Length: 206
Image 1 (tube, rainbow, N blue to C red):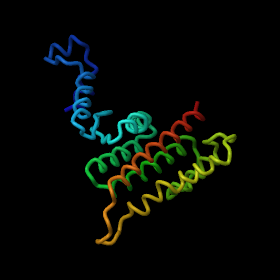
Image 2: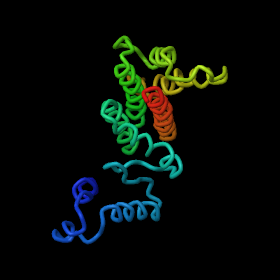
Image 3: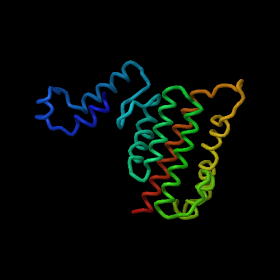
Image 4: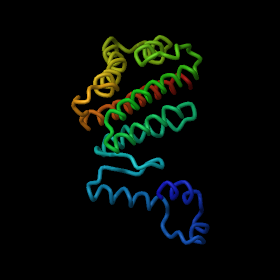
């Protein structure tokens, strides 16, 4: 219903809205919904046409929302779909599926950037190989000191490590369930990584 409000009612001017019986401005209705979520301690928000989980208001505002905005660019369509799928799994308590979708979104973003810049990569390349490639191609400034190597190493191993240990398929039937906070960590780390990579990509594309 709120997706309809955002995408149908928002483009209408005041006269057109009143002529079809819409008395509240769409932005005000969306804000009211989110205020009601917050007031009743419901950990969700409506953003960009979706109900998204927002356990941390700060992380959602500073990381998840900017990530959703960046992924609207056409070249990142596949990464956007996979990130939203990860968010849907997280919201519905499917932690392993969330983590797997996070990894796919991360790798799809890297492949989209490589394709746009005509940087050749193997179709079976994983996150580690893709991070190495984009760094060699100058995605990050050369002047960054050795301390940045630690962060690049985290990009290579952080999310893939979580996926391999907590999200991999084929686990034994009696394997312990993946905690929700691990899935949340993977989701927010994915969003943070996407922000870094997409902003770096924008800087070299200007």
